[in-house]
Image (tube, rainbow, N blue to C red; front, side, top):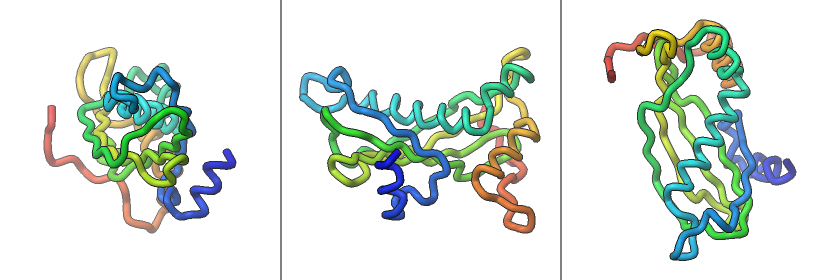
Length: 166
């Protein structure tokens, strides 16, 4: 937690309400002696799961049958990572529609003292009982707005969805 506070003081992670600290393990590296590119996606997954836990999305899914499913993700790799290193994954909702969340993430290497990668993910509300896309529960939207610091009177984060990806 000390590392997180140091980075928050440097303004790098100020816009990210959820920060997850991870360790690079020896097994994360590949034959070229750097962290394999597929492992970056696992780091980002861990950050998204921390975000979902913070808004109680996993509990909500158990109660309602509606959860979030990853529709797409892209990553921009900036530097190679190696063992040992401590990583900080910042996660935030960039845009919230009635049926989806656009998530922005940053992966910070504390060894190199700079971003190692950035990701953008699209999470879609999914009704697991009826096997189809649906709208986000209102309680979940409110928890996201609370976490992101969206207060009444500010620009609304929830917009009506005018496109259909699925």
